[in-house]
View (spheres, rainbow, N blue to C red):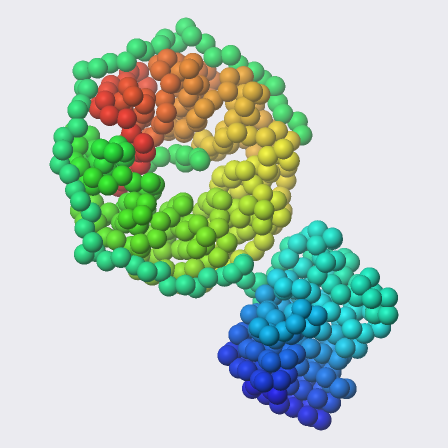
Length: 534
């Protein structure tokens, strides 16, 4: 017994220690204690195993155990912690596993209590059968802990006490925390991943093409006049997402089966015959997802293979790239190295401010990752709700929670600014433009909403001091803060700001540049995606 430490009839203090890969044939994979006073603080127990009880710690007989600020994760045994008497404060005890040969009736998984326990400000969840097994007639004091859920019926299922056996004491867990306890060591998302990516090398070359595309520089589209007025409304609701663009040098256009092209304002150059699934401008480079061919980087001259995995989504911030690899989890790429942030599969994410990454993990809620020095990140659970959309606006995060309304979060507290459900949002100068579907398009200035039209936009793009609004079959309009001006009756499929123009994809009609007065066609090919590249 006691794979690393064995203590009998003594007083033992363990501090700032790491126990990993220890094993015991019987009890106490890392630490075994009998008739002793055992104090453990600021220590980590991972991947330890015991043939019987206490995959991490076994403290029995008249022993007392005091644990504080400890991390107990992925240990193996009939229990992770087996104790007679003790106190546990500000600890994370998650995802420990039963012994492979344990019988169902012997599998208690988390914490086994023989006599008495007080546990508080801790994270306790992710065990196969029980998080706490109270085998004593005394009550266990287990208030102000996070149980991996805020559903009381789910919490009850993970506790063994008098409600399962009338001869046992109750595990008193109310009040409980609705979010991860930040007082305890970081609780890993399930599972936190540190898997090294299998990277491709720059020797894998992308096939390129110099095929010239058809141009339509003499084809002009019909222009609507300002006599066609947009219906307006001044109704105020009660209760991305394009930031103001900077001048860019090149336009990168994915033409589907035609391949990937670059436009410099005068001519087209074929970059690759492969068809991208997704791409984003990243610092002065282009990150391109070529599906099963993997993720590549283009610096304006050369292609470099980064990884053979296929991203589901990616977004850029300064010289960092956040990438969702689906079931493989969320990663950050720093230009030379990779770091796994979470094993959960994000539904959406956005960089907010200089050092924050907001991540929507669906039913697992909304989390913030704070960038520290070097490659360090701090994780914080913000909302235990599933966002439908979110966007960074000034120093706040605007989060759409569907029928629960639109909220602003400033890093400390949240405020619901309307009960209406936005279909789309974008930032325009110091205002938030929100499309409320059949209720119309509104501007929010930080204090109140102003309705500017009752029409329902399909797309909204900030273009300098005007707002470009696609009203579907009603056409494309510009709003200057006072009135709308129609510039074409055609229906755009996509709008991108490029230099001082709008690059507008009109589907099978081709790609056009609009300068606010007229639109001119530059190719009849139909783009699938358009991005700017410095």
